[in-house]
Image (cartoon, rainbow over all chains, first blue to last red; front, side, top):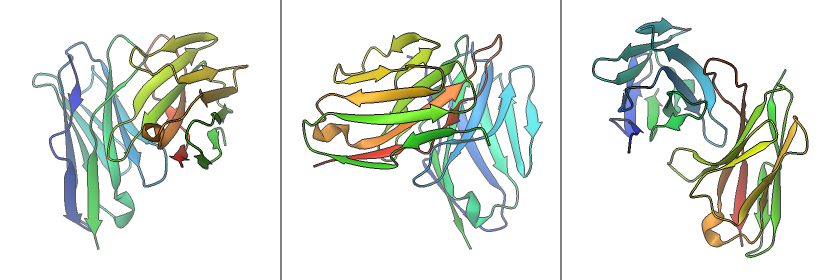
Length: 111
Length: 114
């Protein structure tokens, strides 16, 4: 079946570096994508979203890039901080209000 | 602040003893969801309500049921918890409009089974 997946289950970076978390999706009908951050013991927290009529969207220290040609989504975190350590999930929606979640990537930031 | 609140944060129950988890929201969203999340996995949708309409996922065990008495509250009932039901249970809400919107999650209830 169609699914959303992540390339790397764990990403380790040094504080201050930029982080890139990737997500591949296979449903070409998907038109809305969301990145969530989940800290230990907490629920997923909305970070940023992007619709399919855009290829880039920026927030505070975060940027989401969408490449519809290769069905790829990425989350870039600038100047990564220890507080960014968490599991990051991408989610996609296409023709439904029910999201499909990817596996998640654990981001570990070393001081 | 508008939010999604889950109670309790931690719940311990005995094998086979019914348990109810609670969720409330102040967002006035028309959709409420229940997810099960096990360690290092993505949240798995159990069911959701769109207003009063209940939508069960095909692979959700019969052991899991839900109630939504009004817009603000939603409950997850586990009739006879087994050891495999130990997990984090997440409640989420969203507003269903003409375009897709993100979900808002509570901080979950961690359920342990003795």
